[in-house]
Amino acid sequence: MGDYLLNALVTLAVTIDPIGLAPIFVALTRGMTSLQRRQTAIRATLTATLILFAFALGGEKLITFLGISIPAFRIAGGLLLFWIAFEMVFERRDKRKQVSADRALEETAFDADDVRHLAIFPLAIPLISGPGAISATILIASGAPDTLGLIGLLVIVALLVFSCLLVFMLAGPLDRALGDTGRIVLTRLLGVLLSALSVQFVADGIVAIVKAQGLPTG
Image (cartoon, rainbow, N blue to C red; front, side):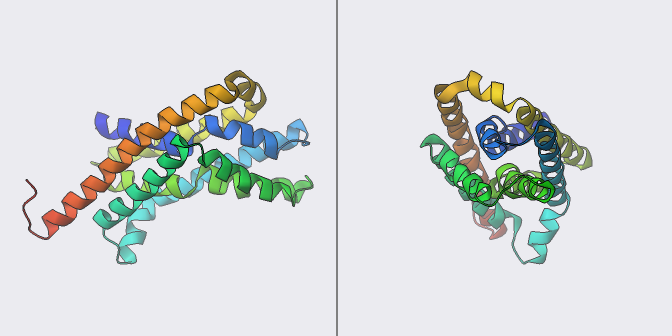
């Protein structure tokens, strides 16, 4: 159980990347009042939590309904996570996120409706609960040892998204404290860690498929 929860914490912390969202949140909410920033942060994190909870509880049933086996999804999800890790190591992920942020800013005038829309896109989707985080959540939930493990996963998801809320509230000072060098070093280290975890997902999926075919694995 301890290894399962630690793996869940590390994988989701890297894919959600609360610290990396700080400069993007600052850019997205520039020109907003303090109240609008707070409303945007709360709405975005609540939405992301609901999305990840839904996939943690029903994601496995959904992919099974679609005729996709868990081992096949492990391989696909592992490859997706590896691509995210590649982007992090070579500094491409932040640029991709910034493109989504800039696209949203082009249409934002910061009235009440725009604040709500900005919280959903691009903050909740795809910046917090993007394809990587959703895939990782389904993969980890499918490997839960029991109901208690699944509850532990939900708690981890809630804590990580809550950390996003804290980061959003402190985004300006945090971004200045880290600086460009700090963000680059942290992103690359987390990218290397995520690449190893993603390879493990792929390996587990391959082993499961080989076993299902009745072939020797050793």
